[in-house]
Length: 253
Image (cartoon, rainbow, N blue to C red; front, side, top):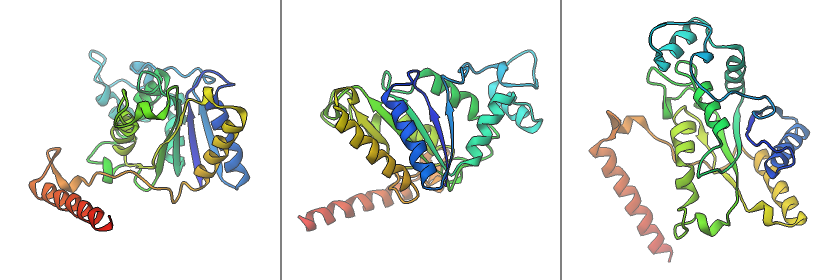
């Protein structure tokens, strides 16, 4: 298994760093291949504009997607972006390792996505969701959160964690074709003692070693949509499926 970890935390002694270090050690020990992009250590530039390209399609107006498509056709991405794109295509598993800031990714990681997930290289031409470029590969968010788990629940002030991560898991990873594994979320590691942190890291190592069979989140079937809207037939099938699950639950009770 080839695993690509994109690490987005500025502090080398952070729990995020411990998670990435644990992941690398466990995967290598099991005979897997690992590559890590430590964005802060790389001094990765998150700003996406003409600095992405060696080529120019329109010198008068920057239309990002047009320039990306042109660069893709003419080998026009700058070397630092080409290297990251090559890692994406190399891997079987992508792990985004980051702390949750303002209910989202740190800016450096969002900038990495903005620059690396370029038209032509990661999507385009009808290649998205179940027809995506990375179909057959898996991805997972590994996230640390300052607050306790109840705050990120149906009754919590921030709402369910799956809703918080939906723009990343669905709008980014799922969109480009990854099968998205259920996230690994570590709540309040700063409140854990050494034994608790060690147990979490051990569990995380086992989680990574089982990525090939780990449960995944529901995926989009693009054939169920016309002009990005679910068809009446697909809605009816979904309603029946939800009703069947509800009946099964009552029967089990």
